[in-house]
Length: 363
Image 1 (spheres, rainbow, N blue to C red):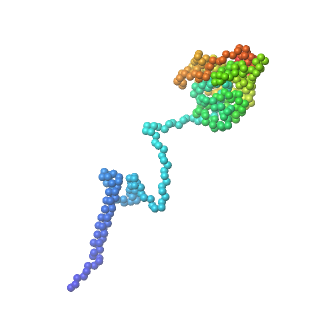
Image 2: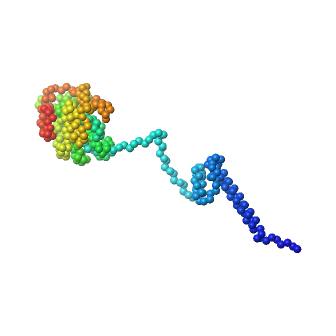
Image 3: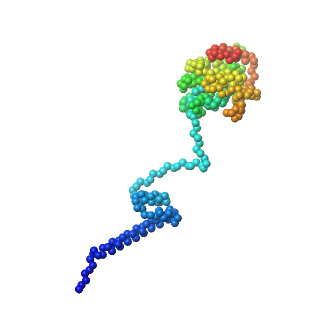
């Protein structure tokens, strides 16, 4: 009798088993290759074996992708994709051990007080003395904004000022303002509340000091007598000469009184600034509305220069005297010339005394 061939249903379990074995073998081979690749790239044999586990979820696949990027092999961009944008270059790191500098405190503000005059009256001394006060910050140089640089604008002017806190006031000094016709109006337009300081001195002595300074720079200029008079025998003084014209204080003051009341103008005696600096600076501090910090303990008299200098204090670590250009020996002037100039200035002085309500005793 012939035998029947086995049916298809009988061999089905064997085929399924073979397929499972083949699948497991392929999967094992893939995992081995993946683990080998990761070990070679990211740490060799010492790398943890847990990294070779097959990814069983989307989260695991994402983690493997991140590790691949960390190894320096970014995934390839798909065809047609745009090139990644270039990152801006990072600023260089500061040197080791260095720290960023602290932000400068305060802000630059337009001055609340201005020393407007007069030349060779003692304005530099007032500025240097008032700078000792902790509530005052002053510009050391003369900006000449309201007479020479007005076209540069207020923002340029402000940029020159020192930084101040809200509790401090800003001060600047330019002595030529007092004799500049446009200065009162320009300062008023900046701020009608500006406080003005005028340091005045015997106009005859001031003129001689002015001439002495000019002579040191220009030795070939005419004599003091020749510049002071149009006709000396007749006693005609040349008021066009700047050294003479500045001392006519009453005339210049009228321009300022058109814009500012006397209560906003403080007059410092150049003579008392030498004999009693603490007293004069006490009045300046009162005028500025600040406490009296600058006192006798801040000054000593320098016999060589002939005027007071600043002592060492807790806030000022060194003695300070004015520069070499201050305290020059005046040229010798004929006493008759001096007397003629005193006669010339007398009516202007009296008018000035009456206007400001203060007798400076120049007569």
